[in-house]
Image (cartoon, rainbow, N blue to C red; front, side, top):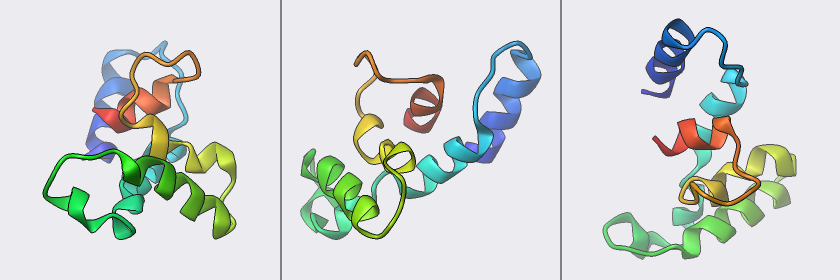
Length: 89
């Protein structure tokens, strides 16, 4: 789905610059914290967001990449970028 969304945005908004690889990585990992909070697989909760970020960083991923774990539910924070919004979609 993320691949198709990135293609669609690229073809309809040619002037909009975004990092396709970052979007694909973020889409694949944004909910990884649910490994530590399985109750959030079928119910509400946001504990997985920070946990996912910390899990990715602890396993050697750059903070820049790990950010998707906590930005995928925050559309209005000042640090949110286009890539974060595309992962959230």
